[in-house]
Image 1 (cartoon, rainbow, N blue to C red):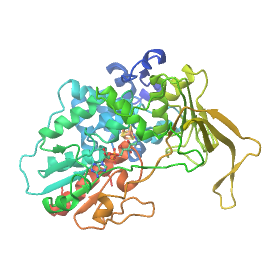
Image 2: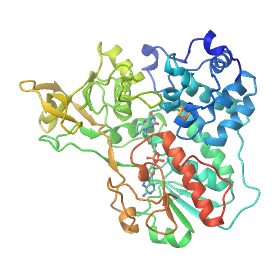
Image 3: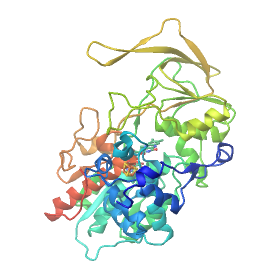
Image 4: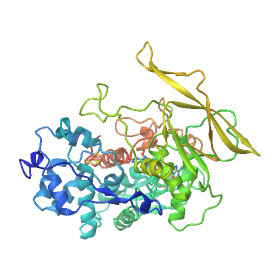
Length: 485
Ligand SMILES: Cc1cc2nc3c(=O)[nH]c(=O)nc-3n(C[C@H](O)[C@H](O)[C@H](O)COP(=O)(O)OP(=O)(O)OC[C@H]3O[C@@H](n4cnc5c(N)ncnc54)[C@H](O)[C@@H]3O)c2cc1C
Ligand code: SF4
C-alpha cells in the first residue's frame, strides 16, 4: 500500500476527453490521459485490501494492488512486469475494457472506486515510450506446430503465449489485416490501430507467423491444416449477426453494423473501399444499445449524419446499483458512451430511446425511408422473468435513410470451416469444449467469442491465455504458463 491515508485525502480522478466539437472532426484517439503525478496520486487511493476484490473481478486477474503500490513508489518498470504477468495486451484493455475491476473495488462500496483502468493504460504506455516492451523469443524451440485460426485478441494472446514457450505458431486470418474486431470492428477513435501494429511487430519477432487473406475452410483447406499442424486452435469470433425479419427488411439502406464499421476503419487506414455505406446527410437509426450500436453512433456523427437515433428494446437501466446487482458485481446501470455524448451535443438531445420495438420498414423506390415502431411496457412475469407488452396506440414512425442493425451476434458461422471439421456446438451454437478448451475433436481447441459467445476484449485475452496453457500442457505433459480459467 503506497500511502495508507491516500483514499481519505484524494478524490477519484479520471482522464479527460477532447472537446466534442474538436474530436468529431476526425477519427483520432479522443482520450487525454492523466499525467504521471496525477496517476501517482490516484494509485495512492488503493487500500491494498486483504481480499482484493478488484483482482478477482478482473477477467485476466490483473494484480491491481501490487501495481498501484509500485507506481506510488516510482517503480514503473516493475509495475509493467507485474501487469504483463496476467495480461498480454494491457493497452487494449486500458482503452476499451468496461473495467469490472472498478465495480469490485472495496473503496467503491461508499466512495468512488480507484481509477484502475487508467492506471493500466498509463503503465503500458510508459512501457512503450521508454522502450521497455521488447520481444521475448524463446531460448529453445520445441517441434510442435500450432495453427491458430482468427487473429482477434483471443488468437493473439494464445499465439504470444505459445510462441514464448517455444512452439511454432502460425496465425491464419481471413481479413487483409491482423487484429480481429480490434482492427475492423472497434473504431480508431476508441482504439488507435498502432497499438495492434506494435504488438503484431513484437510477436513476429517472437517467431509468430501471420498469414492474412487466409480464409480457412474456403481458400485454405481445413483438412490440409489438420495434416500439417499438430494442434489447431479456433478463435474465429462470434460473427453471425442477429437479424430482424420484419416487413421491408429487403429495402436498400438497411445494413448490419459490421457491414458499416469496418469500411470506416479501412478508410482511416488509407485503404480504398468498394460499395461504400455512408451516413453523410442521412437520418440514421441504429437498432441496438450496446458497444456496437454506440460505435455506429460515433461513426455516423463523424461522417456528417443529418440525425442519429439509437433504439433499444430493453427499458432504460437504473441510474445506480440496486438489489439485483449488489457490490462487487458489475452492475447493469445507465452508462453514457462518448459517442452518445457526441450525438447528444450535435443533434441537441439524447439519441437513445428505450423500450422500443421495430415493427416494419417502408420506403420509396426500393430505398428505406421510415421505421415503424411501437413502445413497450416491461413487466415481471409469474416466473420472475421480465415480459414485454406493446403499448396500445403508441405506434410511431421515424425518418430513416440508413438503418444499422447492432443487436448482437448469435454464434460463429457454422457453414464452411466448422461444419467441415464436424466440431460439436453447445446449446447456443458456439463451439463446445471441455474444461481444457478442447473441442469434440482431439487436438482441436477453441477460445474467445467463438467458444464463449459474444463478449469482451478482456474475456477474449483471458480465454486465449487459458487455451495456450492447456495446449502447452497437452503437448508437453506439463506447463509453466499461467491463466485465470
Ligand atoms: C463493433 C464492436 C465494438 C466492440 N467494442 C468493444 C469494447 O469497447 N470493449 C470490449 O471489451 N469489447 C468490445 N467488443 C467485443 C470484442 O471486440 C470481442 O469480444 C473480441 O474482439 C472477441 O475476440 P476474439 O479473438 O474471440 O474474436 P474476434 O475479435 O472477432 O476475431 C476473430 C477473427 O477471426 C477471423 N476469422 C473468422 N473465421 C475465420 C476463418 N475461417 N479463417 C480465418 N480467419 C477467420 C475473423 O476475420 C476475425 O478477424 C466490440 C465488438 C464489436 C463488434
Ligand atoms: S483488464 Fe479490465 S477488469 Fe482488468 S484491470 Fe484492466 S480495466 Fe480492470
